[in-house]
Length: 107
Image 1 (cartoon, one colour):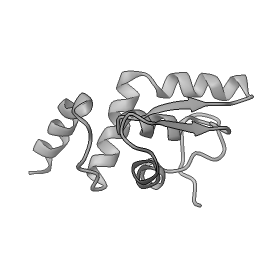
Image 2 (image 1 turned 30 degrees about the horizontal axis):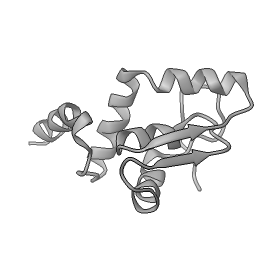
Image 3 (image 1 turned 60 degrees about the horizontal axis):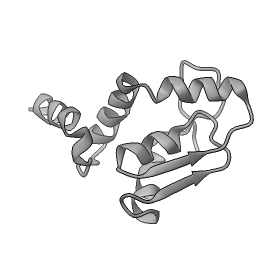
Image 4 (image 1 turned 90 degrees about the vertical axis):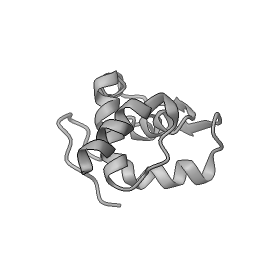
């Protein structure tokens, strides 16, 4: 699995687009995703965007700080935009405003 560059210090951030179909296929809306090696929190962020809850386990306090930063609303918005631009048009309503912005900017 290829990683993607990230401004934080985590060495293995994987793309949100990689985990999105797995979460949608493997966890029902309103369900809970468990990530025992949370790293930078990508799984939790994508779960949040698609209306799932998450339990993230991470031993590194530095990585926990990265996760907290990535869960800020402005950073969640960036991930929503990435996912919508990559064809994930089924973003739940709690992210509808961001979705609408991305779609309106496509034309």
